[in-house]
Image (cartoon, rainbow, N blue to C red; front, side, top):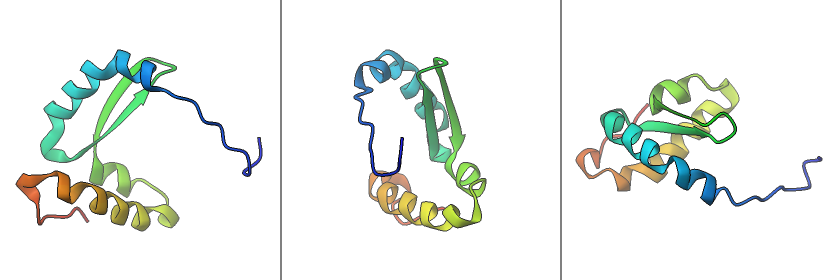
Length: 86
C-alpha cells in the first residue's frame, strides 16, 4: 500500500480486552512516564520508561518525539508539572 493510502481500523474493542493489563502496567511504572505498547496480534502489553524508549529512536525522530512527548504529557502529570524529560 502506498503512502497516499491510509488504513483506518478501529482497535477499540481489541484494546478494551487488554485495558486492565494496560492500566496495571501504567500504575506500576507511572513514575517513569511509561510508553505502553499493546500488541494486539501477539496479545502482549509492555511498559518502558519514555526516556529509554525515545532515546532508542533514530537520530532523525528522537528530538521531534521528545518535543511531542513533552507537549502532550506535561499538562497531564500534575506531580511533575514543570519537569520535562530530556
